[in-house]
View (cartoon, rainbow, N blue to C red):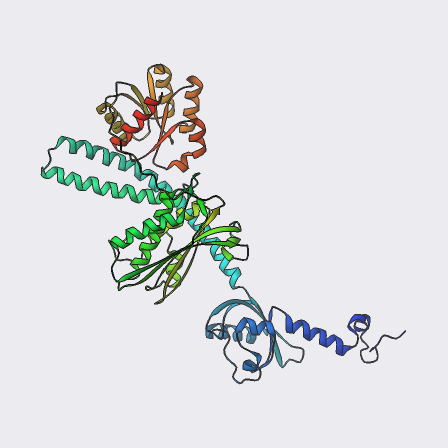
Length: 522
């Protein structure tokens, strides 16, 4: 039996493709595949005039084939410098394979594409295959940025920890000297300046720790609308009157789980950044809404879970940011402000808090048109209460002669803690490492009422020392201390071991309250 069309197409391979029928049918099939392919496919002559332009190319470039095919010269769809590179490669090797170039759309937008060009069989035409890599490049950029931020965060956390140990000595001994000098004395006024500066430095290190460590995972429900109202109240009292604030909060906003104080600080910092972008005035839009995201949203591809989120948007009509600034805006100490006008820690604190709460930030900005900060935090099914609990003030309590063991490898912190405790009415003994601490504990375990224990020690960690002490005396009271925050120490460890924590640098009043509270609970 003779295959249909075999006389027209003696090639045996074509004869076997019965489902395509004759050569004309096969050509139609090939044309259909080319026409409807998502890859941009175009054919041009050696002079650059396009002969065909498929649907994928139309969608990618924004040009219709009527605006491209037959035009001499055709619209330039690649940037000038990339076009030169393409022509050079064709002249040297006759083809282009997976060259990364930038495509300029009809609307002016740029796309990152992979271009392959081959000479057609007739030698008079070129066929182009254009694959859009823009989203792939974007995701790679997000991944690299995320990895860089993790490394920077680890470095920032280590610096903050060491600096907090130094600040403990500066603040503590400054307080001692101030107590020795009468009010009104010129020396006391100088010391007050030192104290204020050290406290500001402590605040900066706390921001670094928030940026670098997972401090946000605490089990309390938070209503973002409540926090945003507080932020707006503060802004209305302090912001430039030329800036108009507009607020739109979604009713029945889903709750999130986290640390209310940190999240409020993140919202405030985002708003302050928007304020700084509008030195000549403008509009500040603040909104909240419930959203549901799936994996098609690009940031979710970076190990973010799909599902319900609360989105808080902060939009300004300010100067906007270029791409370089957007790429670096969350880095610690990066700022576009003049020297002395900013620390460069505002936005990285926003990044750290949101990241630590399992969320992410999407930023859109154009020079001269303003910036939109979209903050996404995973939503919780339960509703959060609206009320805010105020912290109750307590008097500074004195000691009753109890013996306290301080174990810390920093001499200035160790000596200062001993002086503080003795001034408060306690008996203090000190140790500089794990072995010395354990020896003194074993010798005086029946008299030691409390151990103030540093987390990072020569010889063994504070966690290990604590476990050894509990093995010797099961009801040993311990106050863990560190230049890192609670998250570094381990929330589960603290709660599971029923021990307490104080972060350096702490004041004598802070130490007094913690020690007294623990001892009175016994």
